[in-house]
Image 1 (cartoon, rainbow, N blue to C red):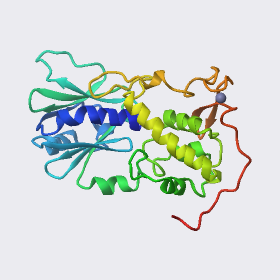
Image 2: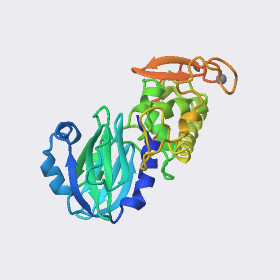
Image 3: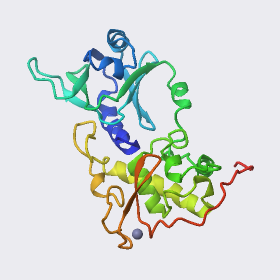
Length: 291
Ligand SMILES: [Zn+2]
């Protein structure tokens, strides 16, 4: 599933290409429309997009945000297998790609094609994207303004495993299964550790690790374990550089211990039992003095 680095890679690819372009025809396959558009009628949705000019391509968490010249924002979430790829306009009798479910034609002879094997992806239009996302997303971990104090508050008092808390988009935005496992490994934190029981040193290490892991993955253009491709339809390379994710049974690069797999909150979790020892259990701290 695409996480922050994958979505950010797509954003960076598409931003200079789509900004300033006017939206022409919008086509959504009838079988796709109810899920993709959340019950909004395809013709109504298309009617709101057609004729608008894209003024910016942003991102929050795993959401792509295309600002339009009428103040609306076209919000795209790729979920499991969604792809949004830049193409030359299709030739008149060019066959439709397998799993292509929607298409947005743009001025200048180009188009965005939406392919989605599993059909969990979503599109919506909102006049107030800030309000729409406010309840869904915590702070952006790669935002230079994000502080360790904010991160500590996201974990404080939580009795759940740190792995589960980091996956909760309302705590910190954009992290998913790959990069949580990678960040916990880099920080030497056991994924089962109670989030609220993390000491200050471990919290600081995890804060730094999360940011570094995400920045590195962006530099490597995301991880293409399966479906993910960038805004041009090419695979990323980060999957070749993972330290623990899906390395079950292979030796840890740091200590040689066999990487183990467990399940936390229903999610496959990969870790080194030696580098990520479970620290002696602490009670979750209910911080009264919140910085
Ligand atoms: Zn190790």
